Amino acid sequence: MPSALDKIAFDAAQAARIGWFFGQKLLASRMGRPVAVPETLRRRPMPDRQRLLADLRSLIAQDWRNIEAGYYTLAADGLGKPLEEIRRALDFFADLSAVERRRHGASKERLLTHTPPGRYPPYYLQKFHFQSDGYLSGASAERYDHQVEVLFGGGAAAMRRQALVPLRGALAGRAIGGPDAARLLDVGCGTGRFLREVKANYPRLYVTGLDLSAHYLAVARRELAPWSRARFIEGAAEAMPFGDAEFDVVTSVYLFHELPPRIRRKVVAEVRRVLRPGGTVIFVDSLQPGDEPAYDATLELFPVAFHEPYYASYLREDLDRLWSPGFTAGERLRAYFSKVLSYRRDPDTC
Image 1 (cartoon, rainbow, N blue to C red):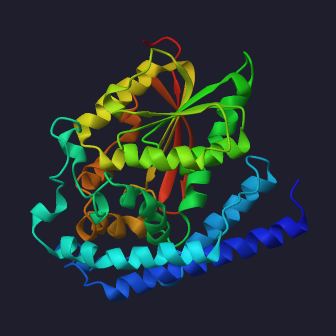
Image 2 (image 1 turned 90 degrees about the horizontal axis):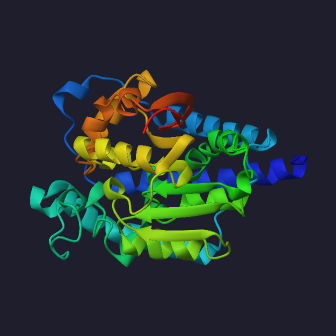
């Protein structure tokens, strides 16, 4: 049970994170040139800074309630070594000029052209979110987590952690062998930040991370080096190199909004194949229109302000229909700009 001192330390660490990353978010917005807002969005209200900070603090309060309730342990996600944090911030701002060129440049600036032909699917060869090198360089992999924290004002780690709530229930429901014998697959694991949270809470759980980027997997291996029972596989989510019913839990964190609609359906089919009957899918991704009406216009502006070529189609996606037939809807949680959904693989489907 966390103590009063734990609460003080938690509040101090989270306040420092928000101050550090939200401050960089504000500075970055002032350094950049705004994109033209479409006419359809100009008169629609969007949350101001006070609303964003209030909702961010609500997320942090929920994070603490989950810790108190025993859903997961106290996270070690302070700012870390000051000099390292400063170095990452300087690298982030040094890259902003290249980001601005792509944001306001020709459409060809958004595509990758230096990758080996045939190794990656065409939809993947893009500078998502205007990232330099897309997902295909070591520099991008080292910069990515800092970029995401700036984008969400220091709330990205807490948003991801909300997926540990349904994960606890999914592992508790595994009768044979208990949680230690379960096998979890994280699809599109990136730099392994979510898997690090998983292993901090379930150190003996067998976890597999699947991702298309060897560069991001290299960071993931480093992040999870303190734990055993972790492996990382380079491969596509729509053609997973795993056997049927190999996993008890499959997680997907911020993957589906970066997939074309037809690929989303292939990924769902692959998840259905590799997940055992009765297993659980835990899905984390962006809010959609109607989840929080005050955010609707901001969500629609996002693919205009940033290069997210498949995000608009994600906003229109009916997720319950996407995960059917074959899955039964479970928990649904809102987490700031994200939502967490769980689905149970129906026992009587193939």
